[in-house]
Amino acid sequence: MRTPEARRVFNFCAGPAAIAESVLEEARADMLSYRGSGMSVMEISHRSALADDLFEEAEANLRRLLGVPKNYRVLFLQGGGSQQFSMVPMNFLRSDESAEYILTGHWGAKAIGQAGLEGTPHVAWSGEEERFVRVPENAELDLLERSAYTYFTSNETIQGVQFDAEPTGLSPLVCDASSDFLSRPVEIDRFGLLYACAQKNAGPSGLTVVIISDEMLDRTKPNLHRMFDYREHAAAGSRLNTPPMFSVYLFLLITRWIEQDMGGLSALAVHNQAKADTLYARLDRQSDFYTTHAKPTSRSIMNVTFRTPSAELDAEFLAAAKRRDLTHLAGHRSVGGMRASIYNAMPVAGVEALCELLDEFRDAHQ
Image (cartoon, rainbow, N blue to C red; front, side):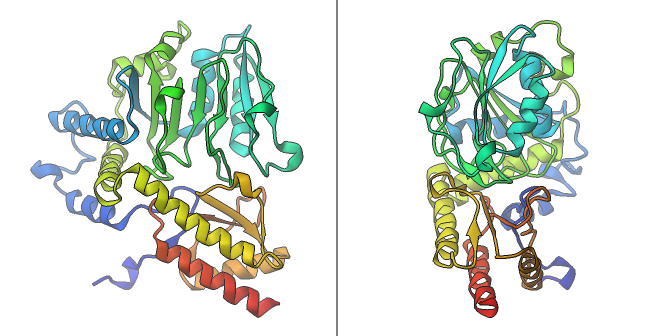
């Protein structure tokens, strides 16, 4: 029986995000002695046999879930998505070259800013004038004949827009998949590099997963600082320095949970789509009161962004949600409104509780 201090809420935070309770329970059981070692996973050496087994299973699980081909490397790194904004151009964009960037929101803009420090980012499409309400059709992209790579963000958490299929071009495709990683199947062989920080669907903060083809590794520039060189991390088996052991361990548990409890990525994608459909349907049914941000064809199934008729009512809604243990529903500070992040670990019951509040709040303020 839980004490009041151990109660659980429905956590709609965009990140760090909710983790499945069964995963947390297993982690608690291992906290004092991992696999009978008498040490926590946070205490074992990253050079030990226990660590070897942990990394090997984490990678094997990921390869199985996503069907990662043999000619791709899996790296477990640190620094978050923000470090990848820099590492990608540092490794692949030379000063006399251009790289294509598809701008669909806040995080893509951050990546473009860092790319400009290495070479020339070419904005192949921008949704800024439309306030980032959609992603482009492939025919809208202004692609170059020669480019180091084509970069896009598969899901923009702040605006709540998402690609339902990756864009296509002539240059290697690089994807920031941080906020929809492991939420659905992905054809990895269509990418030169795909990365994701873990704290949305794949674990706690502190871990970034990079999946990179051997061909892309061969394109890496020479004479890079070791900690920012993908080749160095690949050669060291993701242990060039001390890795975030607890984050990798939680990632391992979550990949097991996806495979064993949720039935794999195809089944999980159906589950996630159903949650999103339920929430969007409720908002659309009450469009006289609630306004969604993203156009229906580009709506994210991970981050549902909406608002009431006024900022004052937004604040009242958030207060009412908190009283019901529906937490972290405020939109990003740059845009306001509300944002319901319904990642893998958000149960159907949480979405249903939010829908009940949507109904009752609208009825009380009409």
